[in-house]
Amino acid sequence: MGFVQSECRVMTAITVPPPVDLAVETKKGIIDGVKKTITLFHGAGLLDKDIGYAQVIHDPNILYDFIQAYKANPGLAAKIAVDKNGKPVQEEDKPLVCGVTLAQVQQLLVKTCARYVLDDLTREEEKITTATRTVTRFLFFKTTQTYEVKTGGKADERKVRELTRHMAFDWQLPLLAAYARLSSAHLMELESDILALTTAEQILTVAGMDHAMLKKAKQTAGEDFGQVLAYRPEALNGIAQWSKDMYSLYRTTLGDKAFDFFARDKDFFMVCASLDKPLVQTYGDVLYYIAAPNLEELQRLNIDKTDILLSAMKFAFGERVVDVLSRPDFAKSILRKLVDSLIHLNQEKNQLAVSAELTCKAIAPQVIRWLSKSKTEG
Image 1 (cartoon, helix red, strand yellow):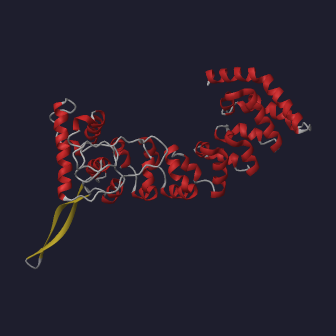
Image 2 (image 1 turned 135 degrees about the horizontal axis):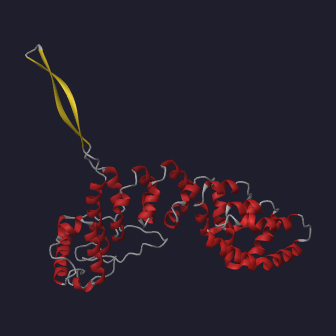
Image 3 (image 1 turned 60 degrees about the vertical axis):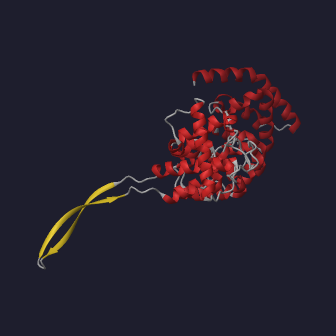
């Protein structure tokens, strides 16, 4: 009997262990192992003595603490978690004497606890209403009777069944209340990609999404769907606004920063609507942070001058260019003058680049002072 050290806060695919078809004797052996471990933890002061097996598998907080205690003290159960030869087992995929792996034991306990908790969390409120009925007595006499009718009070079995299919890890136990907020329609779209949602905030973000929008975003993102969920699920709102071709363009151009771009608001996307493929590639990852007024100012320039000015600002402002271009007030305060200075120049591109770099470098101290002052005032 034992538990798996699971890594869950990474953007790699997480998969549940193979399902366990438990024979009566196997299940009995697992339960016996858990009970023995509980007793050992009582003796070691790792678990309150009034906590028994029932509390461990019914309370997600207790089960979570129990698993953490095991992970920190695997040696205490070295004589319980053994293979068929009686040797201690620590590898998650190595069979125990009962025929299942450590990962599957953890999966079984988490599923059991999750099913119990989710039954309660998805249960409809029981309501009592009053109804009437007419009863005929002695062939001729009719009387009206009132009686109580109970409705609701049932768990959402479909949702519970779908959720528990994906329960297997200790880190999921604190998330059960958030999982219960997902609708069956959400679960139909998420499928196994639900494992990419590793925080309550991520889960609740998806739970608040319209199902039709989520479906459209999934179709558009394709193979990236799970990565979007793991990196920044709110980006799905933006992804649903674009065609597959435009999604592919931004994804290819911006890399993983595309997910930050797609998390931006619809008003910003309206400003981007006029950008063609060459311009998108010219702006590159600037699009994930630039404020809409700054983008509107830059759109007054042709593609060559846009490239020149962006390069000059990156050269002159360094890492601070992100802070500068992400401030909407930069547009009127400084950027408009820079754009005006380039808009009517007819020099060769190389000469324009030198002029733009010199100009941006000259005003860099002024820009940094302006930025500091703006942050203080804002």
